[in-house]
Image (tube, rainbow, N blue to C red; front, side):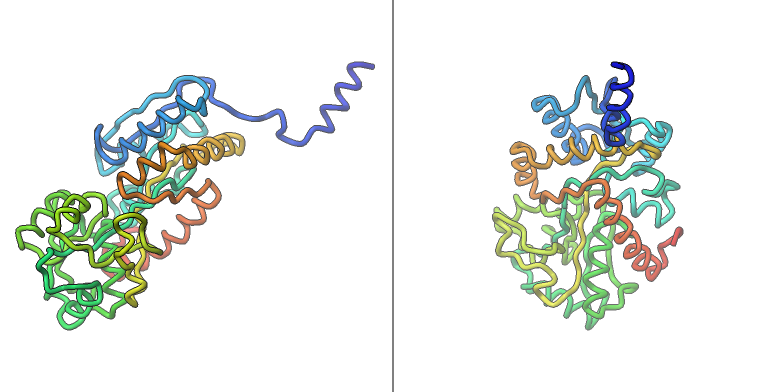
Length: 322
């Protein structure tokens, strides 16, 4: 009778109630950059919060696998199919790389688990520049697309896309834009300060020391709404009549073939990370925005963004995988 009662109780349990997954070994956070960069900072902070709040059972490690603009990391993760013990810190760069043909890996080859951070692109000029607003920048470019030089870090990269979206919305011929490429945002900012370029296009964070010093002004930010804190006075492109928003998102992907239980586990863990005080303090320090999306919403977001990026890059003649 006892066996029959146990069997009956088991049959009445909700499907999956006894199938909750959790790690049984070491969790590895894979980073596509060397130690010390933005993605590495995100990974190590995430790991710290896991440990302090005991969100992830068992040991964890950060594994830096730089190379190939993220391809080394993606290749490594692609070999862990169905294994929820491996997650990678990724950004919009990995999404762009497939479209322009510098990577064979597309986001559908993995399990998108979360968007964690919004890293919005700013347009900055020297403090003594006659360009006083984003409108002034677009007006100059509309009269002559080559009249201004706007520093970016890669043609077809995130900063270049933000520039193209703003110019396109303003009626500028985007194929005629003058966009010199620099090895890093720091190099582009140095060129701006030295009057070698007219506009710097890049993440807000590296600009802040120069903004506080009064040597640089941010004339527009490609965010949906104004950023908090010291940037609350800087208008978005949309406030200036330009329909251009671009988020250099940072998030987490897992290997392809993860089970529903594994995905639910990471939804819970990463959702709690996004609410942690030290997480949000770090975001504020780096001028990042908490833009957490769970796995389902991340997949939908990437689908919509992918379609938009392919249109823009195809118009520029840069899309190899449209």
